[in-house]
Image 1 (cartoon, rainbow, N blue to C red):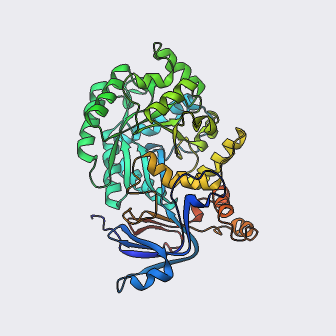
Image 2 (image 1 turned 120 degrees about the horizontal axis):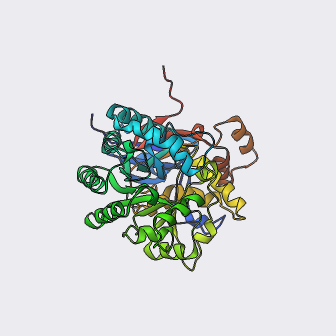
Length: 444
């Protein structure tokens, strides 16, 4: 059945960001309406403002879904998550390369089966909605059918994804390897079938330099040259052992980033997961090419990879564009609230601070800007898709108890949500104005 966009209105406390906050207390970086209304027609936002002013303008019969005391924000955007790793999450006791061999590669082989891929696509998108995530940048498995299943399910739900088939032609089990030519052919076919169809977009997806030969990275670069509107996603400088292995496999490259640079994989639509152990040269080159460093804090802690250096990347002399992501299944939660909370702790260990305003801006407006999708998502404003999340800051007894002491301070409330919040704090999620998740619904 085709997806039908919603026509409705949501009433509650509305928060949306206008630009990146410069510091705590930057009131000009966002719009907050204590009793606001978001009006939706055919899946797009048509009006936002004070409820008292807008209620009388609604069409006769339009429903108003009222969330008193809850916060209504743009839906969360996850910029790095692995669809075939939903049953890898919470796997014990390994660092990156061993973790891939022991758990991930075994699980991903099952995605050759279409029924398995389709069933897990449904679970994956259900779980995103349950956590308030309305858009995501997703890795499939090496099998083209895994991405077909995911795009098909997402488009049927009205969800906008950026996704791609993983490319791997070495250092992986035979059942998970393709070749430079087949990876090019399959990716090209998927681009033709899905890129720009509805809300779906394609990402050329070499897993990382260790699992791709020079020939395959050249094929990835060719796809980007031939299809300039597509994205590129891969991993970069996640683990010290990984970096040493890349240097062994690509001895002529100046550093890890240079491997990708030599094949034309850098640019303003290129997302590099992790970026923990970057040199000054690599950060300067990412700045020059407008490439994006994706912060994956729960994964970096769980796999023991290291601590992301936010301050080094935002050096005003050569700032690197950044995004935030869960990285399930190396990451330990589908929740961007929990992800932001762990990001705060990572930066604390770096002697840095991450205000709640900055975290919520990044998981909404900032991630949309990183993807070049600000005209469609990331803000509550006329013309954008009505992809929305409704947050309950008193969703657990501990949160309600702490909130009593906050006394209406919005930034403290956001910090509470990102430190104690999880899927229980997501009261509802809307995709194009239709409710995709309702925490309080009774399931019989």
